[in-house]
Length: 133
Image 1 (cartoon, one colour):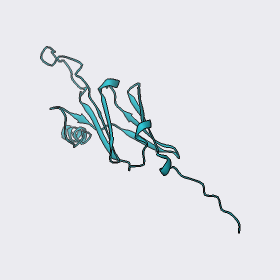
Image 2 (cartoon, helix red, strand yellow; image 1 turned 30 degrees about the horizontal axis):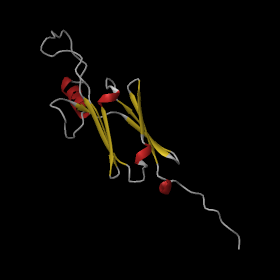
Image 3 (cartoon, one colour; image 1 turned 90 degrees about the vertical axis):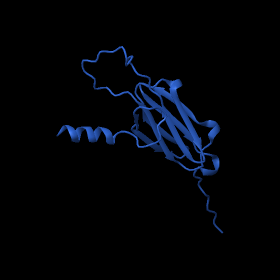
Image 4 (cartoon, one colour; image 1 turned 90 degrees about the horizontal axis):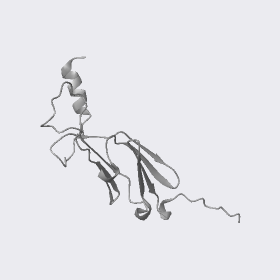
């Protein structure tokens, strides 16, 4: 594979969204699982501290932004090889307005954010009893 194709593939992995900083913004890999009671979002955010994640849920849109600080002082580092790209993570999803906002919970463990979005009672599936007449 040519260097130009490799660079193009790497650029395609970058988010094409509004940037909060003048540096790279990556799109984290995400799994979204729906159960009867909730949506579970698992997002890869390596290098992000729990206090550097901003999660917003407004008008049915879930937005996740994880800020990653550089590991080295750019001005004082004499790089011999540099492959690791530092940048923020950003992702946004339209989930609808059926989430109970007061019960949303998030955890970060080993670079994976786990976000529990409980469904509101009105949006949970119900079994309807059928009566014989």
